[in-house]
Amino acid sequence: MSDCRLEKALTCCTFLVLFYAGCDSEQKQEHAAPYEGPRLTSMLDSAGKALAEGAYGMALALCDSVIELRPDIPYCHFLKAQALTAVSRLPEAKAALTTVVQLDPDYASIWFNLGNNAFQREQYREALTHYAREWQRVSSGDSKMEKCTVLMQMGRAHKNLGEIAEA
Image 1 (spheres, rainbow, N blue to C red):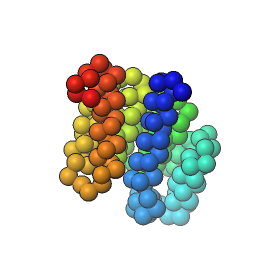
Image 2 (image 1 turned 90 degrees about the vertical axis):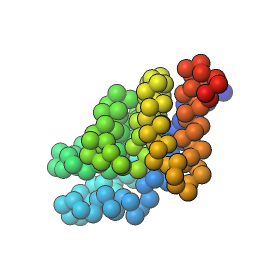
Image 3 (image 1 turned 135 degrees about the horizontal axis):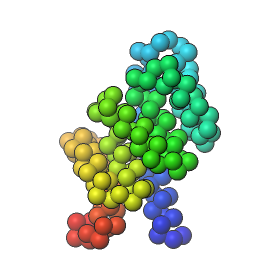
């Protein structure tokens, strides 16, 4: 496997680990529960399931429907960004992630996901800025997995910038 393909595979695996670790069913309920009843909750659940099953077009359609009704739900923009990332629509995914930050700058793993988006667009310096922000969030916590994942991504960005000593 070439280095480029290996890096993309590692980035996807890293995203999936953090996405599912960061968004357990309790958190999904926390983000879905305050919004206009069972219809939106059902649509958000369906969008999450579609994303998990690789039905990215369906996930995007559901997210867009929810956003049309309630544009103030960070979780929906986050799901939309994940679906857009999966189909390599990275500038649109960045816009969705930026909306999440505007709605909730403390949203779990948002800075890591912005870093991954920048990394995939080969904007390594921008990625490092986002990873550093995520590091601030996770460094005082107990999750060794989150810490290692953020540090690994920071090292990869430094390596791609030719900053081997920092990596």
